[in-house]
Each structure stands twice: as C-alpha cells, then as structure tokens.
Image (cartoon, rainbow, N blue to C red):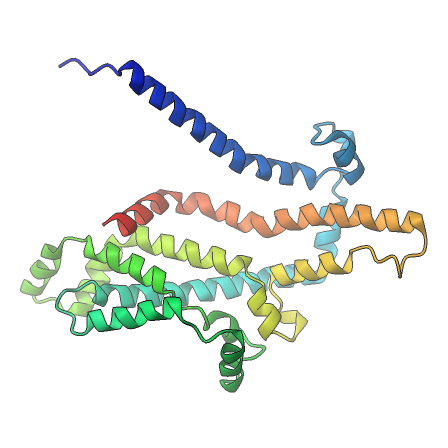
Length: 294
C-alpha cells in the first residue's frame, strides 16, 4: 500500500511548526550558552565584545573565588541532603495518598479529595506557619525545611490520575491469587509506576533545590545553610559599597569580581540539575502525559 503523500498545506503547517520549535529551542538553549560562556569571560571583554571565543578573554577567577569559600562545599552537601530527604518524603506521601484515592471502592475518597483541593486555594500564610514550626521545636533543623510543603495536592492528583490509568484487571487477578492490598501495591503497582515516581521526584528535587526562602526564614546557624542561601550571601557581600571603598580603582575591581562571581555562582548552582535531568528524561514525558491526560 502506497504511503499517503503530504499535501502542500501539510508541508506549510509542518514548516511553521518546525520553525516555531527551532525558535523555542534557541530561546531555551541561548541563555544557557550565554550563562556558561559568560562565567568564563572577563566582565570588561563581555561588556565590550559580547560572547567571544577568544581564550585570551577567558578567566577561571570567578570559579576559584566561589570554590575557595569553605562554606560552598558545606552548602552544597546541605542542599543535597535537604532536597533528597524532601524528595523521599513528598514522593512517598503523594504515592501512598494517590493510590487509595484512585480506587473506586475506597470509602470517603470524594470527601478526602475535596478537603485536599480546598487547601490548594486557602492557606494559613507565612506567620501562622512559622508559629506552628516554632511550637513544634523545628526551628533551625532540617525538619523545618522538609516537613512544611511536603504534601503537594497537585502531585497527589497527578499520581492518582496515573494510578487510575493502570488496568484494574491486574488487581482483580492478584486478589484471586490471594495477594493482599500491600502485596499488590508494592509488588505490582510500584514497579509499573516508575514514570510518575521519577516525575514527582524531579519536581520535588528541583523545587527544593532552587528554594532559599524557607532556609532564610527557619535557619539561624550559617553552617546549616543550603547552597542557594550561601551563594546569595556571597553575592550580597561582594556587591560594591561606595561608603566602604574609597578608591575608584578598588570600586572597579570589586565590581569586576562581583560580575565574575555572579555567572559562576549560577553555573555552580545549576550544574546538579543539568546533570540529573538526562537520567530522568526517558520517564519524564511518559509520566507527565499519562498523569495529565487520562
């Protein structure tokens, strides 16, 4: 059977779509390339020439300044710990909540979902949340960062929708064979749920990794600061203050170092996410599409 040849209108539509996709890729990749190249360039050369591949304009001084601070390594390890623990907690909560809510014979699931959805529109706010965290004795601890916000109603809905798309005949066959609900969940459902689990993990890790506000509110000991808060402190401390620096030459040098550190700090803080994403990519599209369109 001969394949159907695309019409002229089909080729025009495909050409427009391809062009838009190319522009979208350029809009996404362009800033990333600019950020990485700018982190190696001298600020004066970047200002005068723009992006340049002349290696005489390159410098590693920004990275040396960033990595020479002992608190950078500590902040990196803290951020990795906080984000990992938060990811484990929020993914576990979403999966354990989403699966029973996906079952038609689960008593009270509509009432529970209604209560969950209400929390998406109404919240206590920052001050009541801070008072609750303080009253529980979690200030200046890891739990102040990983417990509040660990329950994401949107992610629970995403997980529930994914589980509803799984064949119900598997559960029925397993129950006929004598399997309990826990056996079905851990032996059948979880192995089939890798796409949605990895998507939820990626959402949770990225969101927590980029967050610094919670740490700014709840942490007092600087040794417990995550990477984002450490980099924020470094950038603020390296801003030029005319009241402190009297020499114009010193002001210019501090401004140059501040620009060097700015781009290097962005690259350092973004590197773990850029490294992690390719390993999650094969699950990402399937998990998002199945969980959102079913």
